[in-house]
Image: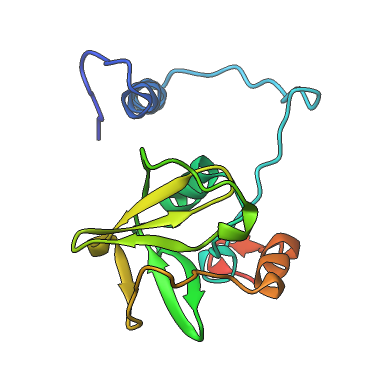
Length: 171
């Protein structure tokens, strides 16, 4: 079992594969590795997430943060979630738009444009274009509708600390 990737290109995926290839290759070759404790002063805790309970979009965030959030909860997960009324809207892709931002935080989540290919939604400092094919919902989406996430769900998602075992989610 060798993951020999050949020459590395300067993309993160390729760098990681080359590192993994070198490590696994060394193990298979019987090479020993020096173990050293982690320097806790340089350590950073990154939380584990549960996409079903924490994948709710906060439209008051800046557009670039919403975009990264949507991508993090996209495939293979069930998409980042928000609502129109009681109807759930799952978003799998979005991108910053050239459309000028509207000047007030009251516009957050407002669909300001709908075309056959995309909707344009306001965030705190800018807008996002969301391709129609990147949305899963049974609710009709129109300009003037507002995507919202109840504050109780956003607060719950922030307070939740999922715990995992080798069998999966523990709680």
